[in-house]
Image (cartoon, rainbow, N blue to C red; front, side, top):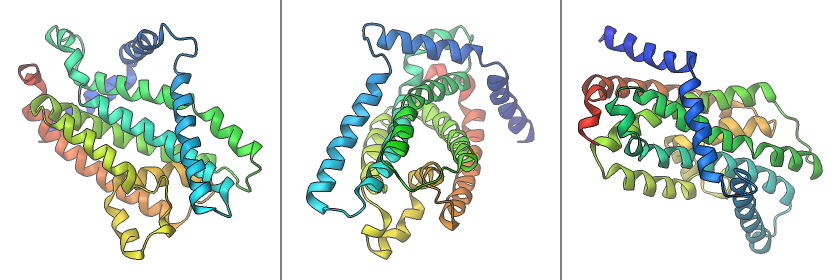
Length: 267
C-alpha cells in the first residue's frame, strides 16, 4: 500500500513539475474550440453575464430585495465558480474518450489529462475576473477583499477538483452510466446549493443539510473571502473539504492500483 501511495503521488507531482504537456493540449483545445469566433473564450463570460442578468431581474421583480447590489455581486461570484466546476466535472466524464490514441501509445498518463482539463477550465474562469472586479468597484459595494484567503480557498478547491476529476475520469471509462449520473447530479446540485438563493432564505433544518453538499463548501471557500466574510463558516467548510480530499484520495489509490494501467481495455 505504501508503494502504491508513493507512486501515485510521484506521478501527480511529475505532472506539476512538467506542465508543458497539459498546457500545450489545453491551449490547443482553446484554439480549436474558438478558432472561428472573434471573442473566443469571452463567449463563456457573455453567456454567464446573460444568465446572471436573467436571474437578477427575476430576483428583483419577484422578491423586491433591499440589498439588490449585494445580491448581484454574490450571484456573479457564485455563478462564475459554479460554471467552472460543472464544466470541469462534466468534461471529466468523456475525458478519455478522445485520448485513446495517446493512451495506446503510452505517451501521456491519465493524470496529465486531468491536469489539462482543470487548466483549460481555469483559463476560462480567469476571463470572468475582470467582470467581478468591475462589479466590485462600479457598484459601490461596501466590501473589502481578503485576497490571501481568496487564493487559499481557490487553491484548495483546485486540489479537491483534481482528485475528484481523476475519480470521475476512471469511473466513467469503466462504467458508461457515470456520465449521465454526473450530468444529472450537477444539474440538481445547482439548485441545492445557495447560488441563486442564500442560506437565510430557508429553514434551519435545510441549512443543516448543506453540510453534506461539497459544492456548497467550494462556493463558501471562494465567495466569502471576496465578500470579506471569512468567519467560522469558512473554516468549517475548509475542514470538511480537507476531509473530503482525504476520502477521495484513498478511493483514488484503490482505482489507481486496480484500473489505471489497464484503463485502455475499458474505453
